[in-house]
Each structure stands twice: as structure tokens, then as C-alpha cells.
Length: 231
Image (cartoon, rainbow, N blue to C red):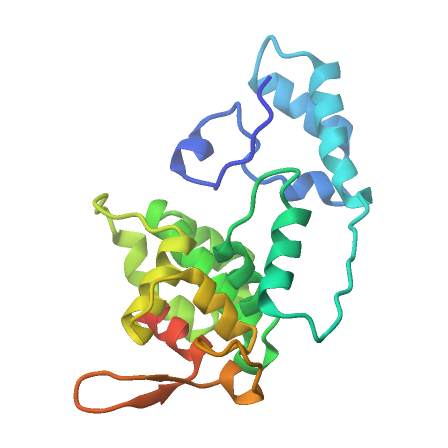
């Protein structure tokens, strides 16, 4: 049996070999024995013991320990980025876009966690339009936001020409608003660093000066990404 996670879509919903919603496995009121029997009834020839061990292994995720590393507040952005990349290099390598997403998520001033969800959900819906109804059902809090309303067109989108990842979305948003395409610069801004001096003024985390035709303007960084998601 293959052990793999995938984003829910219509093909998975129709394939009995998949467990479409693993939330049931973590429900304390759910009987693992009943889940195993139900799965094996739909998939004749599968081993009850093998399926049980796989589900038990998945349940064990809730007991996994998560390491916490505290960094000094006066570290420069290059050092922090290097630590971030090295710590995560033992498994799936993480990118500057991953770092940017983590910085966006913890920005409480601009509703960072909701914005991170908007970016993530937008990219999922661009690939699998049926993901819209899944979000509507399982995340009612987000479904009540303006982000979700402006993404409604994606549920009927059948165009396969361009399916952006969150890396693509961040780069396009950053380039269109600030005329810069390096995600390292976006990370630096989110870390309150200026482009040229690498100084750390408090205002730089909120404002960045750009020069569009007809004059300059000042735009909050998270706000510009938010505008890109909701266009």
C-alpha cells in the first residue's frame, strides 16, 4: 500500500483506495477498528493488519515532539536565513518563499495567518477548483472573510494554462508592486530590513517606497500581497 498525502479533489473522492478525510482518524470518538473494517470492505484483498498499522502510525503524529529554536533579536537577516535553511535541510529543502510565508503568518498587525491561508487556498483552488467547497465546509471562519468571496471565481475555473504555486504568487505580487523579483528582498522587507543598507528601521517592515509612473508611493508590504490575492 502506498502512503501519500494529496490535496483533496474529485478524483480522490471517487477512488476508494484513498481516505478522503483523515480528520476522522484523529477524532477521539472514532473507532479505529471500525475505520479499518470499513476501508478493507471497500478495498477487497487488503490486509487488516497493514491498514491498522498505517492508521495507527498516522495517529501517532499527534505525539510527535516539535523542536523550538530561539534566536537573538539582534541577528541580521542573512544569519537568520542561513539558520532557517540549515535547520530544514535534513528533510525537504525549504526555500525563501517558505521563509516569507512563515513571516507573513506571524504578522498579527495585518492578519498574517489569514493572509497565509488566502495564499495557500488560492493556489490550491487554482489547481483543484473543487477545493473551494472543501474550504467552505471545513474552515467556516475563513469562508466568512473577504478573501474567500473574491476567490469564488476559481471554483468554475477550468483553465490549465497557468497554475501558480505560492512561490509564483509571492514573486508576481512582489514584482508587480515593488519592481523587484528576488524573494530574498521580500524576506528582508518582512524582516524589517531595507533593500540597500540592510539596516533595521521599524518603519521598513510596514512601508516600502516604490516609483510607479507619475510619482512615488508608499505601500505596506503585506497589503500589497493581499491586493494580489484578491484581484
